[in-house]
Length: 334
Image 1 (cartoon, rainbow, N blue to C red):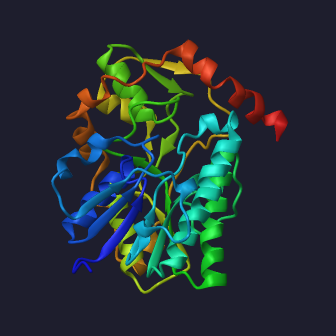
Image 2: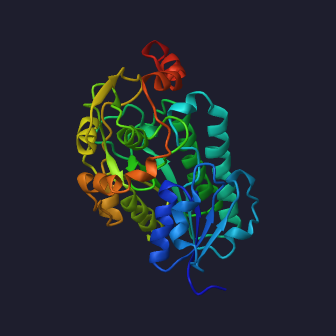
């Protein structure tokens, strides 16, 4: 048996997951990554290629069996695997419910059978819907689209496994994650990936709405630290909001990146502001954000070449990608 504490990170080749792996290895953990490579990139952990304390298992969470050997002897499970794009969930709800709900249940069962000491779930602030701000953990739940619903139901499954089976569970409710290694490919989604590719191509930034809408951007390394804090605490059965508590406008983001702007029609069903009330996590887990927005964006710009192969979005391709969003999220539908 290893003398190092063992941790499983599902989705450990992805954006947040790879930073979680970095932190765990730095803190002296032995890490087992479970990832199907659909949204992750092996290059995210290439700097750990020779690390004997890291093992990568290329497995889909939906294929996990309760007696999975990957969970044997594991102390903590950090569940970050799932489908993360919001807009495409309108087009493909079955995939979201399958992976984000049924996949989560597979990970919960493997964790239960292995008697892990703590299961930490990656929840989404989208579960709050068009929320009052700052948003507390006891805010009413109102998922506006299938992605939000799937993430909320995954979280509820986790708390149910604690209630019924005694599996210790905490949930980290992530607001607007950003940072190095944020997804560069795939369907229309992450604003940083869209803007950085447009910057490299010398094209205008396609800003949805008038750009005054603000988001509570939280840097990825701070998110990883919140997950570890939620694992190492004696507290269980709680959701903790994780944000910077300091919303930034999209106009401020494009100002920091630098370039021309092309404004597109505002999308219905999206909040004007996201803003995490982080009093609970700061007081109970002694966690606080450490990376300011300007510093975080600078860290990403320093690696802007990583977005050279990202898809280049323009007004027509965005219009096509969001057609069903406007169809189903229009005010008259709700």
